[in-house]
Length: 337
Ligand SMILES: O=P(O)(O)OC[C@H]1O[C@](O)(COP(=O)(O)O)[C@@H](O)[C@@H]1O
Ligand SMILES: [Mg+2]
Ligand SMILES: [Mg+2]
Image (cartoon, rainbow, N blue to C red):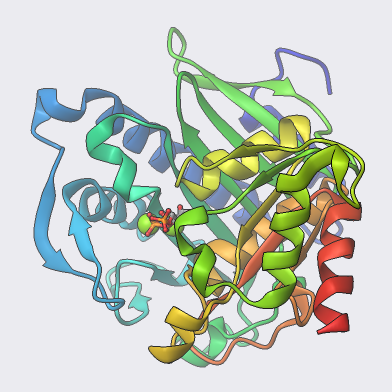
């Protein structure tokens, strides 16, 4: 595919080679593209349309919802529920699964999404994003249930994210590598600008919220300490650090120049009986699919994230992902205990 290809052309071309393609998948991806364009527009207008600040409500995790969390969630539903390509939706911002109203035809796919990622950055005008994942429904006759969504990451048929930054981008995988598209505001279309994105296997850049340092487990403490000691230490090289507090922006940086991103388990979360910070279905699985398809790796510290059997719609897990050799080193430190 050459530069200048639109995302619609790209998706259609990919599906032309997919055995048994019905066009439903292509159409669903295009509905998601439309939703991200609408969210990008809202995010860009921010204070001009009163879209900043809190919505005055909480999500199932007890987090205060931002207005744009709620607005983006509504736009995703609005763009995907009517078209007959999805059987049900699940979102970080909705306690239960969203069943497609009987007025609309139902489709054979399930859609999970984090409508607005990096919510703490909205009011300070730092990059935020949207994360999504598509699964296939086993039985399309009956109504979808929560159980239908509890599939391992390896069963995803597509995943990706939109990044609302200096430019708006979409990054997508359908299991044939990873491609990035930039929104041309003049024509309102995403154009292929980053074909075949791959993550360098080595890196000298790590990302973690250091304010949680005193709660980290020994393997992560050891890893970060060694990075901070730099070339005088066992790593023999200096490391740089970044923390944007928007997972989408961190992963995009890693897809662009390598790195390792960690939101590991820690004693503070363990005390609260929390399995991690980030959500398995809406954040960890889709980002792991993208990262692995770009040649990187993604683990919890105990196992490969994509092989986890989800136990609940809003399950949270530790996440360590990025440049393969660093992730494998961290896995080694965890194995040593
Ligand atoms: O506030 P912290 O501890 O830095 O956490 C930041 C992390 O939380 C998140 O904002 C969670 O996602 P949401 O904004 O979708 O809730 C991630 O994007 C980010 O990596
Ligand atoms: Mg998020
Ligand atoms: Mg979110």
